[in-house]
Amino acid sequence: MRQNNAGCGEQLKLSKFLSILILSFTLVFTLVPSKALATESDISIDARAVIGDDYPKEWKNAANDSMIDTWGMYNRQCTSFAAWRLHSANKFNFDRAGLSWMAYEWGVNARSLGYKVDKKPAVGAIAWWKSSGSNYSGHVAWVAEVKGNTVVIEEYNFDGNGKYHKRSISKSDVSGYIHFKDITQKTTKPEEPENPPVTEDQPTTEDKPAAKRVTITFNYSYKGGPKTLKITGVKGKTLAGKMVKSPKRKGYAFKGWKSMRNGSEIGFTKNTKLTKSITVYAKWKKLK
Image (cartoon, rainbow, N blue to C red; front, top):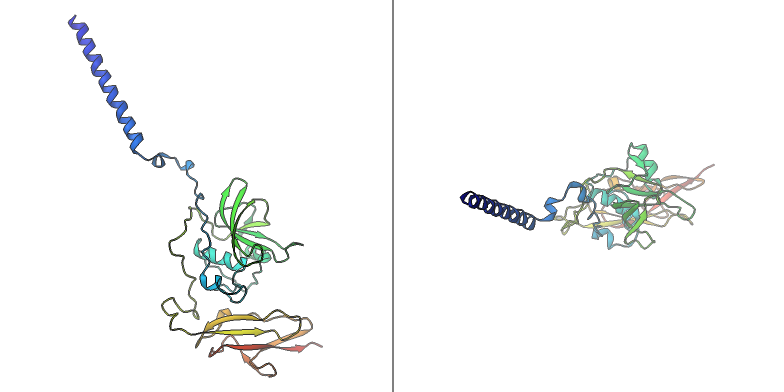
């Protein structure tokens, strides 16, 4: 009988031990957040990649095509937003490298500079459309999310109104994806959007209240030519890297910018110190 009682006592001890063990496991799985127990494959790195409209207010609030951004793009265009997002989110310093960067040229230019352009989307890549019959200018957008065959992009001027837009596309809809510097970790919207990089002729945030900005209006001086272009600068500085490229006109050679419409002398160059807002006029010479 003692032996049986002893056996029962051992069984009771074992049952008590198992009960405590089960309770311990229950508490661990209850108190530890499920996220901490998730494996790497359970967490999508691009689940929160959409940032929203973080385009700088200085360019966003100005009239469409009325300003040139830090990278030489017209404000509120798809190219300007793409260059900004590469800077602010990807930490990539966009370099024009002396090339024209119309939207339809981005893929070709990127390849010529050694960057990969393929059909594989990635967060932080640039979705690129080449020129087509219905879209002569092409288009570029920033890839925010990749979910199987669906790609979420953020862009500006998609419908021609110069505003922010977000949409989902099939990954095969584009001409290619440009991989300047893709993002390998999920991106979240910063509390305070980062300011555009400061160039030699662009004042810092602290300097802006004291710095006087002037506007140079470039008039191409012929009927049917491009519309006038306005570039802002800082009084006492030069336009330097923001100077417009020499325009082209069929049958004529461009000779420079005049400070007077009816004048003949070249009065404005990239090294001219800015003193006030003025209009300059293209000087042309007819080819023989």
